Image 1 (cartoon, rainbow, N blue to C red):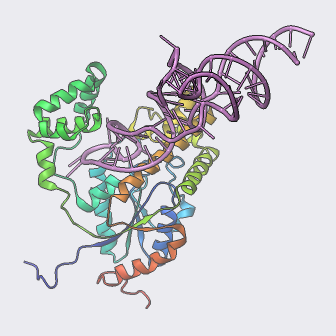
Image 2: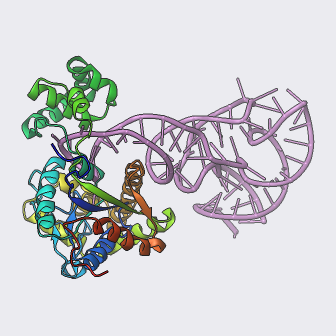
Length: 323
RNA sequence: GGACCGGUAGCUCAGUCGGUAGAGCAUCGGACUGAAAAUCCGAGUGUCGGUGGUUCAAUUCCACCCUGGUCCA
């Protein structure tokens, strides 16, 4: 039993979130440099090798010598998901904290951050073959057929899942098929109640019009910097357009352009629009997390003192930090 | 200068035999437990080009004007 007056400390981590293009990477690199910390990526697309320009992966130069983890950890045709992220990130955090250095988690993938900080229920992992068969059935029988099957096998889940939400219908069916238990039960039992870390969540945001302008400019820059060549190279290396990361924003539009489905200007316009919509979904997600403390670009000076205070009381960290 | 066709939501358009209007996309809001840059759900945001006229009532009919396009001079 742990002493209630002196409970064992959970590892502390700083998490930086926010919509795409708001400047998370730069802030993280600045903080890590200031506090002697290391960065762990929490972006679902930056984990893929060979996908650099379109994912806005920080370049070696931009990293300024700060160790970055979970960038380039899998090939584009390898399976990667929230559970794998949480496991790998957990290992990296343990390593970094073991050496007494601050950790800065940076990324815009809300589910990955939730999986890391609150865990996922124990359940059967993704079964590629089973999912392929479900997708085939959606093509032939329509998503309604799968939804009806879910209504039979897990009525509670069917009640909570939209009838056309194929991703969640498939996952719910997968769980009941492979485990014999319903996803509803597993979710209720787990309830996101894991608390492996003590986290300081910092949210970066800015005026919407300004962010949208930045996003448009950044997409344009990606094209100017060689996104088309990057995608051409991926295809030439045998990474098919049907792979999960090849469907990411920027990549699918470039594939359409290379196929001759549209011109480059149309591909860019669609990429910009989809990125803006993505940023909006991220806002929705992170706004819902009441632990996030928000900062705009003119408030960045307030962040280091917060981090300093957060880690100061941590016995394992910042022991050599100047007063 | 004349004829014809258009002007309705941010865009592309539909519609009202006279009772102040609706689709797609965009936009906005939301959901999210091994696909999450994914996958879904919800909401119409409007001087119906302008000014007059007819009418109980005009975005709709009439006149003129403005404006875009095509054709004829």
